[in-house]
Length: 304
View 1: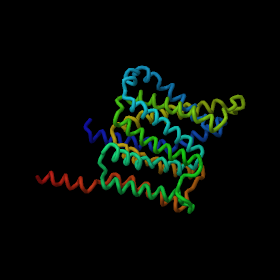
View 2: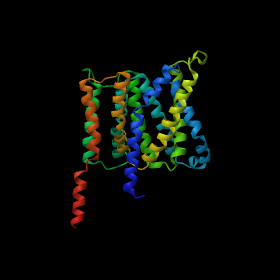
View 3: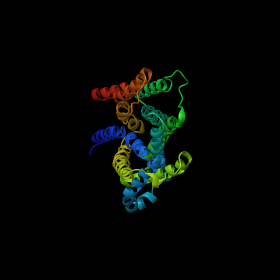
View 4: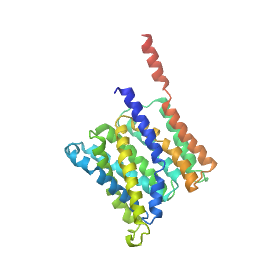
């Protein structure tokens, strides 16, 4: 497959799984409502993901052991970033947490440009500026200082930054395949969850759970679909695309999250918040516009 087709395929995969992750808050809150409260439901989901992926992790253990330490650390950090994100969806408003996560393009572009010397196009600068303005409007919609408030919003902010750092490390150093990478990713999320969970909520009383079968069903379904299938696809796409592009393409999740939370959970955005969200979406559109300098260079090359 040539490079252009690979980029297109990877982009479509990111968009598709972005839509899927727009509904991720639903099983998390359903598990919580059934009595597996707080972060413990997310920890259970991580256990399912790690168990499902263990055969690939064991089969490819030599590749993992031979990987660069930065690659291992990046995969573990990537898992932790989605653990932060999962908990943010439980403790904060869905739309706000999702949009905070999408500071990822800002962090990844700054890190890539100033630490790794990656080029930055004019269209991407415009996209990032639109995204930042949108996020400021959302956080400051009530007239207060535009900073995260509450545990959920801080977890959302932390998840975006951690994913930006992790995605750069994965792209630069990771040589492992998607399945074994996802195994390590799930293990990292599980370890992070086990560290955070006791600090946020007591261990659920298993004897008082009203419907254990329903809880197990939701946990297994979420672990397999979101933490095995989708993350394998996303990790593969991350190795084919620039981190900023991955973050921006995943903004399909923003639309689905906002709409699903409004229609199902009754979480509506104010007018200012809607304007901010629209700017975040515009940032995603601007990212696809061809950069003027690149067009000039291509036209010049044709006439030579």
